[in-house]
Amino acid sequence: MEYVGYFASILIGVSLGLIGGGGSILTVPVLVYLFNIEPVTATAYSLFIVGLTSGVGSVNYFLKQLVDVKTAIIFGIPSIIAVFMTRALIVPAIPAEVFEVGGFVVSKRLLLMGLFAVLMIAASYSMIKKSVESTETAGPRTYNYPVILLEGAIVGILTGLVGAGGGFLIIPALVVLSKLPMKMAVGTSLVIIAAKSLIGFFGEGGDTMIDWTFLAIVSAFAIAGIFIGSALAKNIDGNKLKPAFGWFVLIMGIYILAKELLGA
Image (cartoon, rainbow, N blue to C red):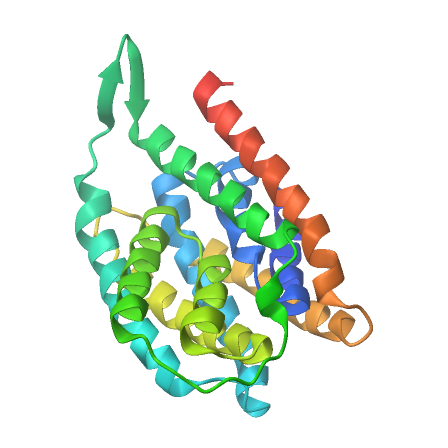
């Protein structure tokens, strides 16, 4: 399973390079189910892997001037604060047994993995449905500051809890709230994800033991996948692959939810 895990790590980067997002949603399942890493540690590892991989992926968008720095700052500041506080304060404060209903115990693992599964299902919907916002409309650049700040904070909290980058939430928000063209929204999203994920990782509590060698190896495979995905993107339309990837994420989300609820 370890070798399957390394191959899956490559696919995380391929997805990011090919369709501009979505790959990070697979990082935690790969770490938990293929490398048998405990969920809380897996969400911390995922922040590092996703942050580093997104940072590398954003370089190409910077070179093509497809990053709106002002929007990245406006959206990124509340998101960074939220993810840092979530990893430093909220996650360590969650008890091993959260609550019990009729003899059914909701553990910390079930809470985090269940939330992650629900997030995967939500992400799959945004990938499968036809997006009317994906047209390259060049409307006037506007900034709905209160909504952008609120959205940034919400995404930051979710990122801190489940370790996913949240690109499927950030990209539509940037297109709708800041009127960014789709390609610029993707590039700006990668910068935001890189910053908040890495800062959130370094806000991790001291109880989490970090295997830096393992983390470096998995990150290297994911980064290699970005270059593969970027090369494939020259000949393959990522938008046509996104619905198929969305169905895969949906199946994975349902599987994880069922597995954790049934204790299989």
